[in-house]
Image (tube, rainbow, N blue to C red; front, side):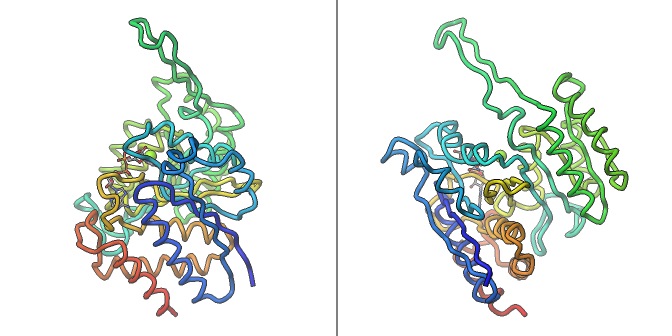
Length: 356
Ligand code: NAI
Ligand code: MG
């Protein structure tokens, strides 16, 4: 029997509601499949841990996580703590520490889910956004001087390296090649940002020579928001910087119906370190503790995790179960329904049990 070791980190807010839901669904798949076993260890890290111990995760946290095959992550963020402290103290520490440079964000409109785009039907919006996840605008480079004085200054420097841009570009081309339409949109802002973004364009053209079967287009990020809203059928795979893809993928989630269905994977494609799977959304202060968080993003990222672990049949079974439930009309309030997290979870577990 194949065994996979998973580190679960629910962390903050609705993370503590959706990760248990995700684990219940994974357990149902394990029982239904009978050919793999999941060993799960849950870590208590996050903002409550910070209040008790003065740090978001243990000093040796990365060392302990190294022995796992994958990380299943909820969300960080606390109304009473600075966001940069919580994000850098846990989530970004793992992403950067484990060189998870490829952030993959699939978007499609699930059956029964309504897109705010009036004319778009299920199947017409089917995208994968590939986000550079290790440098760029979120490299953490910069500083502040003369704090509190009139002449205070802050710099936030974007870092684009040939190695960093080349590896994310190659990864995006590979994903584009693996999909039926084999289409890649390279997003930049190389008219205004004339150093790093021009390097992106140059490297995209270089890498494209190795992928003659992939059709490549360039688009500036502002124009890309228009294309996403007006011509969603003209998008297949998208590659963009850390900041640009962060913003575009929230828009993508909203266009697919809700942030509550949007999944992501933070991948170390070489598998030198564990990869991390999480919903795109944050800790959602406004609905924390109400039992109404949509768990579908967490289920979908669970399917991405199973794929990564070499369990494509279980991943497929999970997505079919999710689609059966969304098609049945059962929805949480973010999708216009009245169902609770538990209702969706139980329905997906039942759909897995009764799947053939
Ligand atoms: P958010 O994603 O937490 O919430 C935005 C809106 O979407 C809220 O109205 C929320 O109720 C709704 N929403 C999000 N997930 C949902 C779900 N599963 N079901 C139903 N509705 C859902 O983003 P926001 O408000 O900007 O940030 C809140 C906190 O989360 C901040 O501290 C922020 O730093 C953190 N954050 C953490 C992320 C992570 O851990 N990867 C990602 C984004 C934000
Ligand atoms: Mg974001």
